[in-house]
Length: 117
Length: 117
DNA sequence: ATCTTTTATCGTAAAGATACGATAAAGGAC
DNA sequence: GTCCTTTATCGTATCTTTACGATAAAAGAT
View (cartoon, protein in one colour):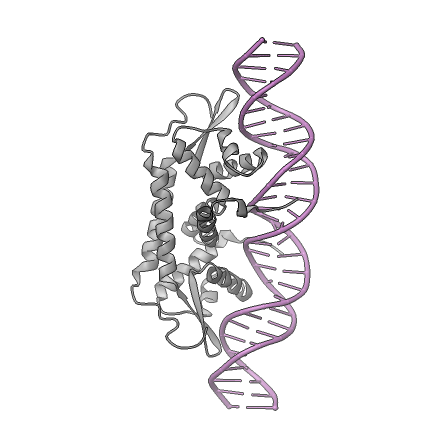
């Protein structure tokens, strides 16, 4: 049996869900916040901040990089990561668009008017 | 070997990542948009809109319900779902807060100043 | 050249997500 | 009561994610 038929959905929805998936783990949210805090690049410091092994952090960084939210540069023997602020603001506006759409039909929740839970 | 140590992260990050995970599949984004469009509750119509079997849609609906983004009410023999607009706007503000934090350190991307990719 | 430090990748194990068919449950129609 | 319709849940197969240790790779230090 097949698995994951993302191909059959609208590309807008696929794109958004792919970015949402990048935020779908607390470690990755923590990494993004750490990168923002130190603003300048960080490398193995991220490992110190998180309760995870180095290999795992590197894997999360790769996912963030694949999603485009983070850029990595090799700095001598160490690696340097930065937020990709353009990608972050793109994500913010995609999500903003979704939320606008979700909130636009302004009538109240018509569930729970009648019937049980 | 264990898997998923979400317990060790800050609860703010866990909460946000849990909500992000709800958006991390195109089917669920499509469901939310469909619910918003018809505004009023929908039931098996959702199945018609998506390229998925009934059982799969029901499973996605359950995840959205568990995340709190959707409410479900039993309407006679059929079920009726609605957006939980309060939860959606909570999510929007949580994400907004994150993005503010990420974009606040306004200096330019200090990566790629030097070094290779 | 050898050692050390730092990071990425490989291998692997286990948990979770995804999908579907089959079946149960619940209520309306008859 | 018996059917039919609708939805939820169970069972199951497969793919993905998550995690870690081990090891490779790359560059500075000695």
